[in-house]
Length: 88
Image 1 (cartoon, rainbow, N blue to C red):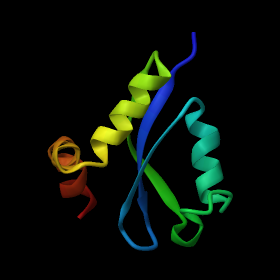
Image 2: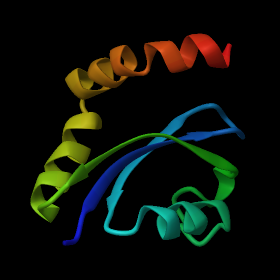
Image 3: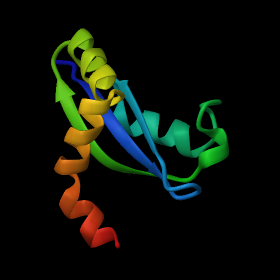
């Protein structure tokens, strides 16, 4: 069974988040942190702070799109409230 992951990374360089989806979460995080992704190359290093798994690629894509809009960002902010408080 293959999973598709929607994920949120936090950049230690600028403190901002990056949202994406993949079918191999470990590999994708390594790609981001090694500078292989042009859109995040200047923002490394990253830490994985949230992910969700889907059984269908389209569901993961839709979730990524949701997280990138205002309502989705609010959801993530509430969902990660305890993380933000413990991270300082």
